Image (tube, rainbow, N blue to C red; front, side, top):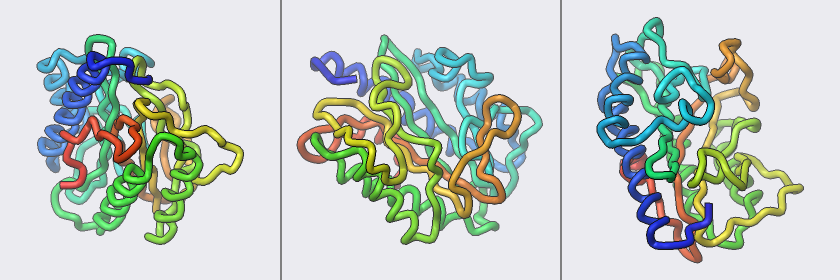
Length: 253
């Protein structure tokens, strides 16, 4: 969406604060021995307490309030009583929601308990690259150049980007124009970021895979023979540094 008024900005700030806090609190709540269904139910309690509605449920009829993906799963993992968090698991939580007609989206990967599988470098690389990508976004900058930056930084860090997943516009619905803010350079994309537009910027990094494949449950996408992470902020594009609406998730703390 493009912000047209102070009311629009306030509405986006309110829902973005909610999804950011929900993500942060879910990460803090996660622990070994807990099922992903239990973690999702905690997310449900938080969203309901804030008065917000789950965006994937509203938009797609997703079988969960949030998406929770483990290890090789890149995104859209279905919460399940059978999926138990274990020490050192790589977990991604994606929280998106709606309030008063405004929609916001954020996500983050983290390690449950001790980092016994040495995933921290992958997690920190994704966070670092997201921060750098956001810092380069201005009105007039080509989307493709941000994709180039993400891909270049991932390669320098020894990782690959997932090419069939992307960031997107957000605001009055979960997915809006621009529909694909890719994590790699595509010379055919000439679209530029517009001042006052709201977008969800995402980094999708993997240890080996460059494409996410369907797991077979109708939702979950996996990076075959790899570990994968995702980090995401909803931002407002300006003439200078973007406004990070979902900063409450404290991805960089």
